[in-house]
Image (cartoon, rainbow over all chains, first blue to last red; front, side):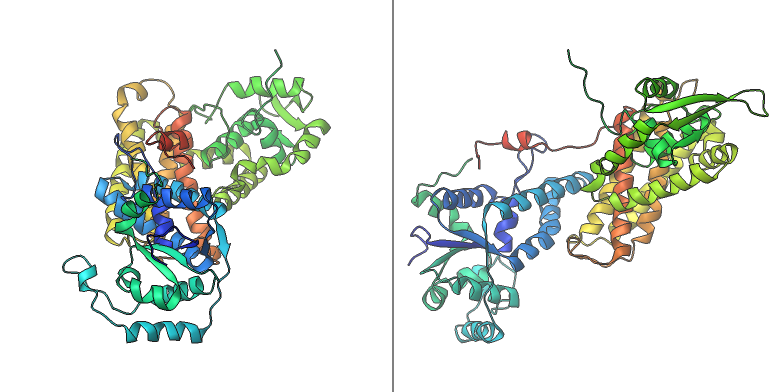
Length: 206
Length: 294
């Protein structure tokens, strides 16, 4: 199954949940949002509207709360938001995260150390340079971190014929073909999300 | 038209204060101090106090107490003293006691879901202990010392000094900041708003620093700003990137709660005394940004 087909089921990782939560503003007359906030929300809304199973794993939920402050500070710094307002936006983003986790399903995490080690081995065997997938000058270990491996294994173990995941993590979209074959997981790179949603006629607000 | 229900404890401040003090407060001065301390420390007491010589004081407390008496919630008695003046004693009646017991949980309901509830309870116990155990003169002396009320001519100077100290502390805190750390953001955000509040007080000099007694709100905000500096110093070497939701360390929870309570106190008193208004984000505002609906 290609990532261009509509999902059978979808699991959200921490980054996507954060982007969904960064639905803030207005600040100085403009919405304060992550660039991908609206397409991610359109993606989630589309899944819910079409009754496509969509959910999260508890470890990803914890990561999203943990990484929220960094995301707010990044966004705040880009837009010149002072610390006091950032603190308030953080509270609002936390509420948004709470709401998201109430709206979507909590998937059971099924994994063991053997399957995680096998996933690590899978990446080592298919090892490739990350350079083409990263911003110029940045580097990344070609083997994903433990929690990414767990996420992939858990998505595979959900038992659906295919699980879609949206990610801006180069580890996932760089290996998307291999992952699709070995794990029945269709990776949509975040940068392709606008195009994919248009293909499905799922409206993205401006 | 039906009478609007009273808001607890905002309009029932007198009953609330009596409940805090085992049902009895002897003297107007003490009642005023009890309510002022509760307001200073973030309780929703809506009186507007003035820094009078035996203050903070609000003349409306008398009226409210009389209303509570009419509602059979409290009794007010004038008792002779060894001094020239008689003393007014306030006592909770059975109806008031029942009301308190029935609504005991509600007393803190506004704070139950707040991140500063630990510190709020801590301050409540301190105030309760002070009002219960200290003689009126000692209580007034302590409140005046904490709020710097005996040298009110220096208020502007004090605000300027604390503003400078806040700026310095904020500079130091920012040097050690970890952008991913929620505690850093809470400390810096609170210091930021404290600075703005003091700036607002200094800028409105003509309006606020005229003759007569000053609004106590300025002194309350100054008090909270000073506490914030202390808490920020204590937090300088905290563990970054702690998951505050899952944190089990009670000392960290209490410290966070103290910082957030002081921010709340500055925001609350800032609004009540029309000094500064906090930044608020409403869902309507957010959704007005585009057409997206869940």
